[in-house]
Image (cartoon, rainbow, N blue to C red; front, side):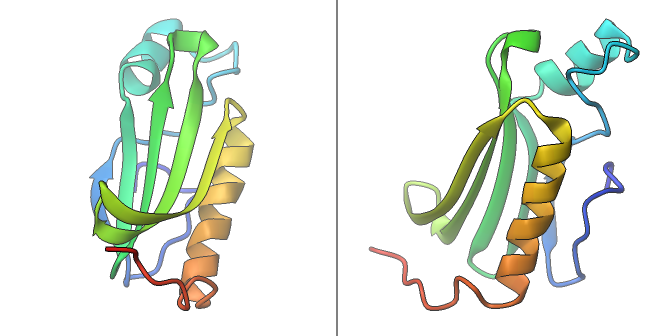
Length: 117
């Protein structure tokens, strides 16, 4: 994974991995790096475990945008059960939420939820 702060087991499949260790609020990070590796990457991360999908994107204009994190159950984005959704521009919070959602899936927290078809 491009972001070493994310803890996933071998049971998770990486479908897309463009989530670099870049804090959008960190003034020490070069603006060109932020632009190319974050702000232009609407689809940053997509990992899945069985029918569970965790999807992270950047939405909005550059530093006025925010991360959007989805956790859903189902094989089709248009026919699934949305389990969690969070919006933030706080990089550390996104990392915590990703790891929390992964842990919740791994521990079976969402297993009793059935996908509506």
